[in-house]
Length: 368
Image 1 (cartoon, rainbow, N blue to C red):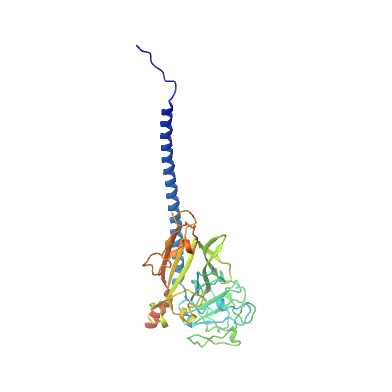
Image 2: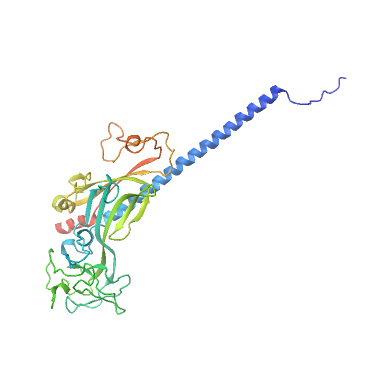
């Protein structure tokens, strides 16, 4: 019998076959890993964009719906007691005339070319109410609580018949009294007599009219805090984000990833039907006059949202933006030419239409 030939090594051909098979398996594993990583990156980018778009739309929708709210009365019935000659008086901050305004930024506020939205009204649930009827319209206000109210605050008191915007002129006492004296101890202070309103009330005003409210408020009256909000885009640390500025306070970041912000508004001339009969594109600093702003009943917002991750798309994207553009011939907004030729971020357009419901309710009340 022939002896068993023992193998003492591998031939070159066997080594080459083994190495080739190993390379094929390695390449397959790398391909699978790379594909999974890319899928994860795209999914994460899409999730971030959706989260930014949906949350921002919901936030702005709620703000627009609640704008121009002055308690249970229209703004026409609210008197403004603030001193227009007082130190620090600002038409924007202290007039409270326009519940809504919008314009395209020139770079003074926000990023030039993006839109700015201004909302006014009062906030809170009216938890502060009058405990005892005022003996006269210059008397201190006896309320159920002064929690959260401080000297210098600007407040609105309303009882569904009349209302007054005034400034608190002393730190509220433990006896829950709110003072509204005249003079310029505070900025801008109280000075104006009741003017520019539709309802006239016999307000039993002894002495200095600058110290008097429109009427003797009783237990039907509630106290709110007026607000002046500006919504705009700004750049911080190289990121674009939506910001809200509350009066003179420092702006607060609402949501990052919002690359562009455009609006158009629906106008009901004379507020006669509560429905928008014409639309105005906010495409300049003076696109919307003050008169037209007072007749806005609907706001359409279109936002271009960008993922924080780059190298997500295969090439610079093209989208239809703003959403009301005529894109019958294809996308009109090319990222390569309007933002960056090398940008491969994921871009999505989010659009929402909101009604200023307090103005629609005013139309309905007038009809009834």
